[in-house]
Every structure is written in structure tokens, then in C-alpha cells.
Image 1 (cartoon, rainbow, N blue to C red):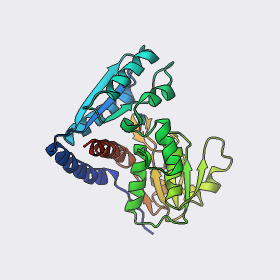
Image 2: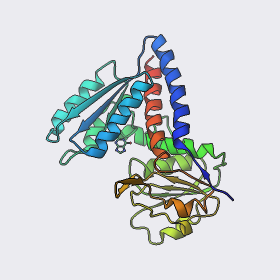
Image 3: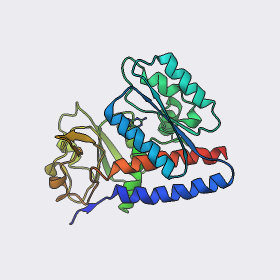
Image 4: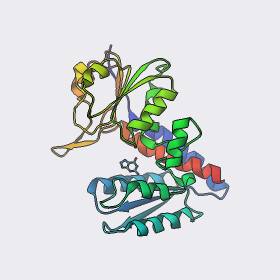
Length: 281
Ligand code: GUN
């Protein structure tokens, strides 16, 4: 079986065109979707992510606000900025870029966002809604991964899915979404004893650990859908968690890095923003 490249960049462009149309329709009704991104400190990777989010927002015709705060910002100052955005009628979505510099408490900051404006879906209430299957704002990366998997046309019902990584941002919501789609889900992590024994059983394998090339060719079931969420910098080059050369000769579908999940995360951020704005309208 030849392996197909799951092109997140191309799919994200399609999604973004549709979002631009929905944004135009909203503007015709007097509502301009607005996204506020809060960046605390000067982490260079976060700088790039935040800049890209702002550019994508403007390209879609939305209002983009970036709030830059110094690394020494206190928890109270951060809360006050979030509360001002909660009260701002022109802002639909609020995102606090993670990680926050120490000693700021991420959980406190995320829970200060109005759940209705929580465009990342990280507020406790949205996390709980996703867990219980109620209508929730779904975190952007897992949502984008589900859209990519759907592109393969694979019927997920009864399939074995393995998620490598148990973060709140990707691993846990990813496992919930796959379970809701009818998969039997295994979540592996740093304490998993025999990672390969699990991954070899996966019809759908999602790697989200941040370890370059940890998923090797002999860990993948022939024909599997392999989704690489990793973004690692090695010798100045961006690489994923999947050893592409090896895995692409075994799998049925693989996402590249860059150009796979990354562009879909941004597209889903825009989609979440426009959905919130449509509710306001
Ligand atoms: N840092 C890395 N990924 C994300 C994300 O999806 N949302 C936020 N807010 N911060 C991140």
C-alpha cells in the first residue's frame, strides 16, 4: 500500500476560505468577529505562534487584538486584563498563550476567561462539557486532528486508536474526541512500559509528546493513519514526533511536519472564533 501525505496546509486553506465567507456574512449583519490573544513574557516560539494567529485572523477579515504583557506580570494584573476582555463587546474569543512564565498559575488564568469566550476550550467548564458530551468549545489542535482524520474517509467506528501524550491541550481532549467517534482508545505516556506494543495495534495513531522521531517505522501498523502533532526544533529544523522516512513506507496516511497539524490548529482557532461570533449575532 502506498502512503498518502495528509496535507494540513491545503485543508486549512479550504477551511479558512469558508471562514472568510462566514465572517463576511456576519459583517453584513453588523458583527465583526474579534479574537484577543494575551502573550505574557518573551518566549520566542510563543512570539511566532501569536504573530501567526494575528495574521490569520486579519486575513479572514476578523478583528485581531494582541495584548503583550511583561514576564513580571502578576496573577492579579493578568486577571484584570482578562476580565477587561470578558467585558469587551467587540471581543468574541480570548486566548492566553501557553506556557505562562513562572510563577503564574495557568489554571487560574484559563478559568478567569468567560467560558463563552474561551476560544481554546481550556476553561474547566468547556473541558467538563467535552468530557460529558455536552456542546463545548473544542480545543483547536484535537479538533483539527479530527478534521484531518475525516479526510482519509476511514470509518472510525470500532477502530483502535492510540494517543501518545496525555496533556490537557492535546492528549486528553484527543482521546475524548476519538472515543466519541467510536474508537477504542489507548492513551500512552512517559510511564508506558512497552510503547511499541500499543502503537503497533493502532489503526489511528496520534503522536503528541514533543520527542523528535519517537515513532519509528516498526512501531506502526501497515496502512494506519498516523497524525504527528509534534513540533520540535532540531539543529534549526522543525521536525515532528514521527520518523517520517520510516513511517511513510509503512503507514497508509501520515501528516507532515511542518504543513500538517500546525495549519489546522490555526484554522480551528478561526472556526471557533467565528462560531462564537455567530452565537452573538
Ligand atoms: N501553546 C501551545 N499550544 C497552544 C494552544 O493551542 N493554545 C494556547 N493558548 N497556547 C498554546
